[in-house]
Image 1 (tube, rainbow, N blue to C red):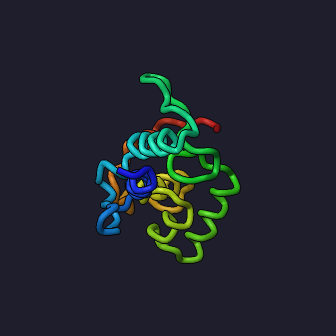
Image 2: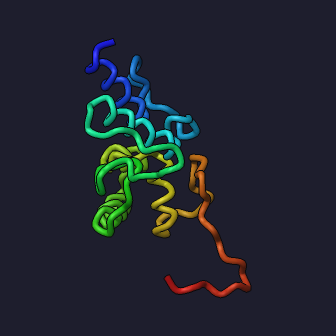
Image 3: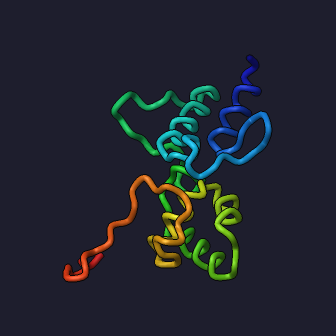
Length: 140
């Protein structure tokens, strides 16, 4: 298989899209799972020759900050996300705009208090913790 063809397939899968049909994977698809997205981006870099995949058990950031799925959220990106959501953008639009998964957008909106848990449509790997009614909230 040609290297460019391999890269197109890996990039499509990492982006949550079926490489043959262009159909977006559902939120519960394995290809939307953060660890799998990170592994696919590692594979892309390995094929490109930029860096070898991280050794087993050693977790490295899969993408540079601010580049999308698998990377940490910056305060500026969170502000843009919140503003776009407040202006009426859908989760799908936000996922494409921020190059993140549907589940990643929902998890961040939940964390920012923009949606509540009942509005989440994807299966979150780490559902947010909610304090018990009698338990005081800790300062962050």
